[in-house]
Image (cartoon, rainbow over all chains, first blue to last red; front, side, top):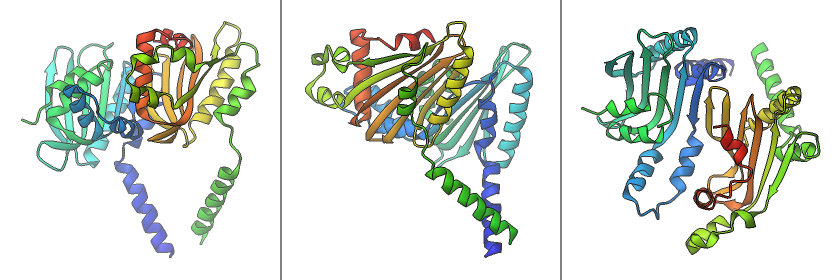
Length: 176
Length: 176
């Protein structure tokens, strides 16, 4: 009995090591801006059944209906950014996310990571990290999307998140 | 052996905590509505529904599941920061109970917004919009109704855009 309990506890603890719980301490910080859309929201959105004539809206709701959560964190505080970046690298090493692509632009480096999904064009987790280069004032942004994500549709999410710094960068992701 | 007792002990504590009657948002309204500086407004739905006939019949029926809207706000007036801090802490505790399901959380610089609901996804009992910032104060808008469907909220937003019946939400809008 006791050994079963210990095994269960150990398994439980090893699960949390791979989870995104490490983000919670950052979202609580004053210096970190962000947004979180929960599974509850996506479930609700899925229930707004579409007598909507607009095909674009319908497609958007379909894309969104398969998502589980979206989290965005951003900060212009360099030490917080560095800590968040380091913790994210640890998380990436432990979980099975692969580097998908990287874009270098004036003042920033945008890296996409993804966890493979059911098919080649789908991922179950997408992470986007925007690291400022050169400027001390610029924002570090981390975006995490969980769910059944079709990479070709990711650009459409950019519209939904247009207030978020870096959301536009999502349009650069494609499955090619 | 010790581990088993620890787990039993924690289990008992949790059980006792959940049996404790917890403060509710309704109770918070009742406790604070007559206190100085608090603004409490019961919005008559007739005002919000003043141009309901712009919606198709099915939409009108869905939206009528929303029965009441009440607003509780505490504007910061320079003297009442301590009052604001205490009330905010209590509110955050009430809302973080798992029964208030989080839909969306937004934090931008010092402005914060949470959307939560009580009930089931297709039969919402209470919908809560909670916004606060350290310069202006906080505002809570509660929508109460009878098995409200998410679609009712969508219609409501559509109506409000159309009719400019933005009473009570002005404070919230000023925060953004």
